[in-house]
Amino acid sequence: MREYITLVCRECSNRNYRTPKKAKQAEKLELKKFCKNCGRHVFHKEYKK
Image (cartoon, rainbow, N blue to C red; front, side, top):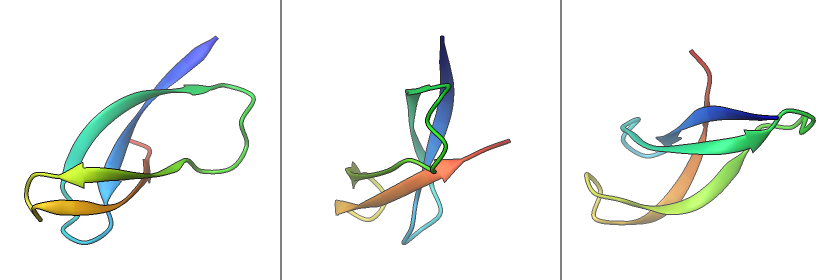
């Protein structure tokens, strides 16, 4: 079963992406994605509500 999480830009704290995450994965997800607000590729970290 997959859980959907939101990814937050490290630079501007903008919530840009929503992606599935496996339920058994313990560590926080961190991906390098394009941020529209910053205008470049930066790391996005997992944000839980």
